[in-house]
Length: 167
Image 1 (cartoon, rainbow, N blue to C red):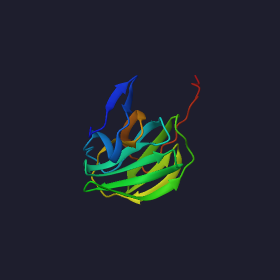
Image 2 (image 1 turned 135 degrees about the vertical axis):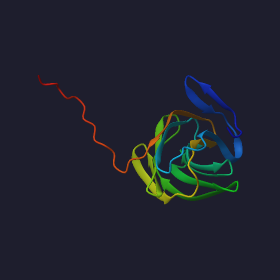
Image 3 (image 1 turned 45 degrees about the vertical axis):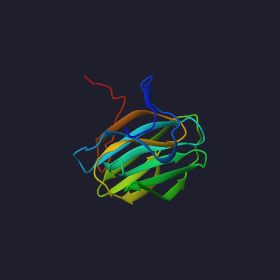
Image 4 (image 1 turned 180 degrees about the vertical axis):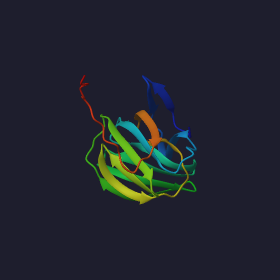
C-alpha cells in the first residue's frame, strides 16, 4: 500500500482522508501473469470529495491506470499515472452521490480496457501498462469491498437458474 491511512473494518478496506497529491494505492496483485482479465470492486464514497476506484494496469506506484468516481461532480474519470504525474484527460458524466455503494468493472482483453460503472458502459481505451490490479483513492474517505480479479472471456456465458430435474 502506497501512503494513506488504510485499515480493514467489518471486512471492508477503508482509506481515510489523505489530502492532496497523486492519490494512494493498494495493489493486491502487482503481476497477474495474464494480459486478459477482469477487475471488479465495490466502492463507497463517504463524502462528496471522496474519489477512488479500481487500479487495473500496473507497472509500479508511479505508472498505472485507474478509474475513479467523482460524486461531487457526477463524473467518472480515467486516471493515467505516468512517471508519478497524473493525466486526467478523459471523464464521463455519471449520476451518483456519496453515501452508497457502486460497482466498478474493467474488462481488460483483446488489447483494450472496457470500463463499466454500475453495469453501465463508460469507455474503452487502449492498454498501456503491464498487468496488475488494486484500488486507489484521492482526497476524501472511501470504503472498498468485494475486490476480485478473474479471467477475461470475450463473451460472457449464459447462466440458467431454476431448472427442474425430470425423472
